[in-house]
Image (cartoon, rainbow, N blue to C red; front, side, top):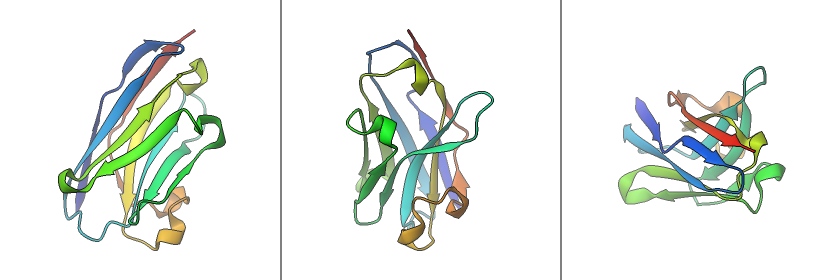
Length: 124
């Protein structure tokens, strides 16, 4: 089993910055993909950024250049640095992980382990 706990959410004005953290514990060995997803009220959960075992990353177009996903392997901690935040970034942000094939990193259905989420609110 893998446990994921997010932190770092909060309220910020448009143009501001936040850094989210996701602490992983349990059987982290063998995890091939970790990712950040978000879900706004009334909308489907969407992929924000993914990172595979080799450090390759992928971003949602609207956050490219503003958000950075990174990981400290020795801490099993995943980060999401968010800059130039916009009102449209307001959502509950979730950390997720899986041990499936790395080619399925972009696929939300591949993720077996989820955190409880951390709220990000951006006021314009």
